[in-house]
Image (cartoon, rainbow, N blue to C red; front, side, top):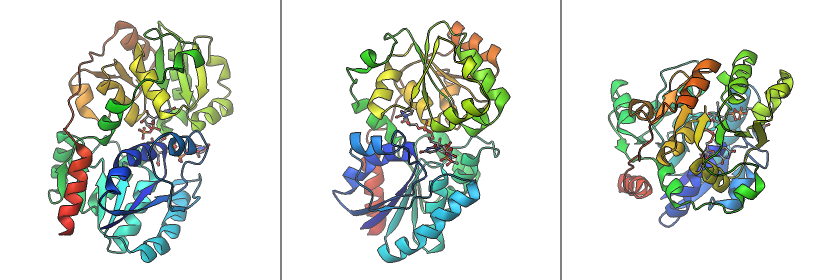
Length: 349
Ligand code: UD1
Ligand code: UDP
């Protein structure tokens, strides 16, 4: 079995670090890095510190409008897929790299396997929602992390090829030990800080939203460590919001995966608009506050482990200060990696 896996953004390098090594025990994998993320702290750090294989191809798509970025990826993927002629193309999640991988493969009649399929925020203003819907409707095998994801696909008429696999990320979170140096590198103490990440276009590209969120972070009961996505760093500078980074908000460059998990595990609370971080924090049993009005990980809110706060500063400060989130251990499926690989092999027979 030959597989081309398409990755390009931070969370996809992390997911490939879980699937690729085991996939390579039974199949030939060609890894394509679209180049969507390219700064060392958004890309190289994960290839250096996690068992994600070196890419066979890097497309250098870089940043730009959705159309330009996705178009560059599509154009570069065509000859690679033609040359490699894989049995499967694997795509992860909901980024523009996911969309390009799925679209390029489907147009060449190559079956697509979508990992982290079926998630829905039901908000089409999110570019990620469009990417998910399209990828799911093109995919032949749809690996769903949750039962809600399976149900979402059913409501869209997708029942064939749907597999409840569980979430790959659970595997990695559970086996990632603490980075012992973290608390000497950052000026926070275990259990006595809030970890925040902010990078969604909806939050960062609107000056009012970004201002509200940064202002709220400065009013929380503990210091806030804020690893910055480059997009957020650029927007803070563009909108002149540096003054809102009060002494209690500590911006640092984006961190590596093991550092991040250590920081999540020992945080008093996690405040985030990230899909992956909200899920990980709940898995780790840390109270989680989501800076959005809806989430594609609906179970986390339904069970009270995570609370939606939107970008309204009063709601954020109140929810976090009152400790409205009620963490409890989040069950996962036994071995999502085995389920996915066995299913792909089975389909090949
Ligand atoms: C993308 C995904 C989002 C995911 C996130 C993971 C889409 C539509 N969105 O958002 O779902 O949560 O990745 O982190 O695919 N930039 C740099 N250096 C980099 C990468 C980006 O400076 O290495 C800056 C550029 O100014 C760029 C901006 O960040 O324009 C946004 O990058 P982009 O890849 O378009 O989207 P993300 O916000 O990273
Ligand atoms: N992450 C990281 N360093 C950071 C911020 C996030 O390693 O500074 C990890 C995080 O632990 C999770 C993944 O990146 O595994 C989530 O990616 P991101 O928030 O960029 O995207 P999303 O999940 O929202 O698509």
